[in-house]
Image 1 (cartoon, helix red, strand yellow):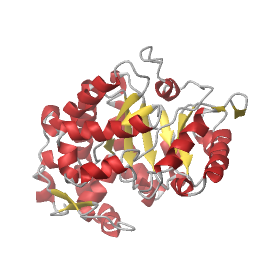
Image 2 (spheres, rainbow, N blue to C red):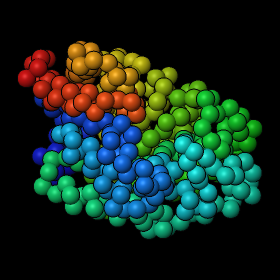
Image 3 (cartoon, helix red, strand yellow):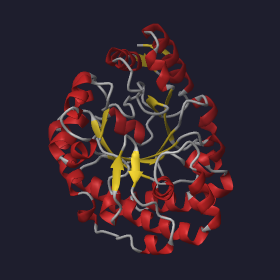
Image 4 (tube, helix red, strand yellow):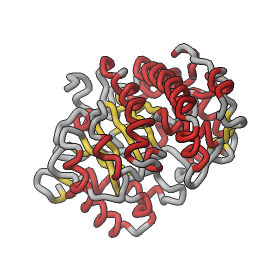
Length: 349
């Protein structure tokens, strides 16, 4: 276990300690449900917010000023490192790739930038956030997109329900697919190492669309590249978290990954998930829609997650991101409920 920052409940749990209280942070905790975020968004585009270190740091810290969360996650996007490869990306509102990559010439033309070239504003934002968090127990999480998920957007070109063009591409052009995934893997390694060297204390690898694939396809196009990314971070001595959404059918493969924590969605109880990952910390997995319900329901459902998370280390989170219509006071209530719950006595503290 890392001997540093052991005042951080989040880091203790991420390294595998079965803590009496579950640390809590929420995916998309910095976002459109907060009025202070919307105030910044009214005067700056998404890319301007991401690419301006002072704005990215401010948005990262906004939820921690409202709620006593155990971790901050850097405000950015999984697509952030891709422009350094020569890919033009807009947000409308989700990512849109101007020219989807489907030919050998396009893939061979991708640059492989050095770490310091990829997104220097991200490193600057991390340093600003760490400065603000000095002496405080909250840890800072950096993140990136898994190669398979980045490739999903690059080939499909924009958001899709089933990403059928990408799934067909994997079968029709497996050699090109592997060439693209190899380049994205090296990009991801450089980008994530840069974040840790700038001060990120943990890394989460988002494989948002892994669940689209069957187990054989994931073992071919996902697992080896995720393993390469995660293994390349081993020497940095930070906990590594892997997230795949809608991926319960992939758990036999995910259990092989070199990571300390696995973040799971809301579709299975943590008690059902735990046997697949006996050596990992589990992160999750309240249904984000529960935060739209009254406080009594939030309490009831949060307790179910906390009880199901016993039997090993647990970081409380949602099964996916905060929904933009979530009332901030409901988030405050959830944080209080989680922090008052003693996992070892199985009752509120």
